[in-house]
Image (tube, rainbow, N blue to C red; front, top):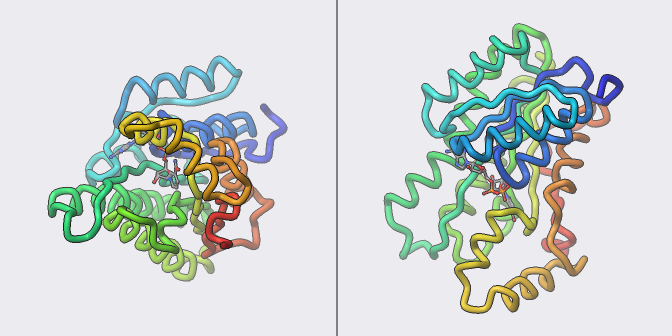
Length: 256
Ligand SMILES: NC(=O)c1ccc[n+]([C@@H]2O[C@H](COP(=O)([O-])OP(=O)(O)OC[C@H]3O[C@@H](n4cnc5c(N)ncnc54)[C@H](O)[C@@H]3O)[C@@H](O)[C@H]2O)c1
């Protein structure tokens, strides 16, 4: 643990109780970071923190809903209280609602924007002042290929993720001189519990899984650990010259 790429760093990862966020938290801890595991689901959040501890890492679970300003401010404050610094912020928590534009309810639109876009804004808003004081910091926002191309039946989600990409680029240029880098992950379809839940609602889950796999030229879904590997590149010194980018990790989905 002590010799990893993130030795001495502190990372805050939202949505770390499941899927991609859990994989990022595990990998960052294995690379030597102290990790604040943030999730509004205590079962998942506690489990990830325990998995890190069991592997010899250093983690704490923080209960927070990223769409609430008070929670976002507190998650940063608790991270600082526990670890004394905040070097890496991964705004990863997200939700998705299936609907075309005219069938999206106003409530679903507002909820998607609140978690997927405002949640990212709030995380950045409360973490950046500390990064400015430290003179450096890295932000990694989990967007989606849905922020770059249209994905069928995901109107609000596509809009929110495109917003995440825009905010990412804005932050990258506004704080570059102060030593803060900001990038986004753009995953294709990744085999997380989220996708498992979507498949479980289908009439033919296995058939739908095969369709999802086939539409990505590499012929499979991504693994959460593969997205975590991209996050490690962006958040470690390996990515020291990378800012304002959206890194596509999609098995070729958007190359067609
Ligand atoms: N799985 C995919 O195919 C895929 C593809 C592209 C992008 N993404 C993005 O990756 C991120 C993670 O997705 P995943 O597939 O790991 O999903 P997941 O559902 O497995 O995990 C998401 C986690 O976020 C938490 N969360 C949700 N809303 C929250 C809130 N308001 N406050 C705090 N925590 C909250 C959940 O409790 C859960 O633990 C999301 O932003 C998603 O949009 C996923």
